[in-house]
Amino acid sequence: MSAAFIIEKDTVLCRRTPKGWQPLSIDFSADSDRNLPPYQLGCVELLESLAPSHWQQSAHWQRDSSNSSISDEAVHPANNAPAAYAISYHYAKTNQLTLPTIRDDIESISAAINQTDIQANDADDTGAINAFISYRQLLTQIPVALADQISQAMQLLRWQADTQFCSRCGAAVCAADSGERAMVCSVCRLRQYPRVQPCVITAITRPNPKSGEMQILLAHHHRYGQTTLPLQYGLIAGFVEVGESLEHAVVREVFEEVGIRLSDIRYVSSQPWPFPSNLMLGFRANYDSGDLVLQEDELSHADFFDLSKLPKIPFKGSIAYDLIAQIAEEQGVTLA
Image (cartoon, rainbow, N blue to C red; front, side, top):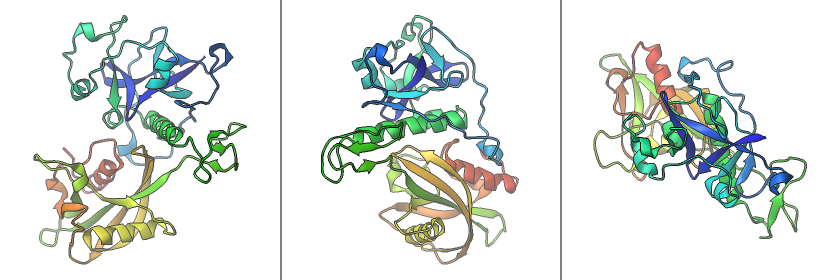
């Protein structure tokens, strides 16, 4: 018997614990007893995540892995029973898999993620509260390896749903033999593999010309869609183009979006990001020259901010936050 995460779009089925929401994995078997093939639409096998601490040097990447244990006969906390599969909620319902009671008001339960006044009648037979929770919200509460595995689950299920026909001839595809993670055309035999989209994200620093305090370049993007204060700011980021090196992409994206030149470009770390299927590659660089000239269809505002006076920045768990936090720590600044 294996275990499976339940995924619904950009959310994952979770159980509320004293330490917050934790992903659940249900008992699952894709064997002949269920008459289910090991690979079909809405069901993917996962690779074990080898992520975190033995090769990650920054303390900002060491998320708390001490999660409380909750158990019953059908449902496990994912960190105690690592899932071998991921299945969509639609797949689970279609195949009549056993699921715990799930609150269906996803938006309100997600907004109440840090509240404790959830009513008893919202619980399942074990007294637990279960709901689909946004991956972005979970990042602040779960270990890196678990976050990476859920990211993999979301990306593979989306790739599988989007790859049902051959991109060359239009014929139907089927799963590759021999456990290879690929879809194969039934006519021309073209193989299609999961797509990974590399993106560079860069923390750019300089000393304040007047005070000497270290500053970091932050920008407010139109894509945030905010209409209320405080506005959220982030780092300069963008996709790597065909034929580019990562360093070239850093230089191009920064010049395109804010019109400045850089020096001392260096790689720091990476993070899989399932929106939709990105690999974020984190860099740091020093400001070299040029005045800020914004790409107005991308940015509404950008400036160098003193580390002691930062605006609202991306949430903990994101690579953007970790890059900013690394620089702040070096300068003896504690982020709020």
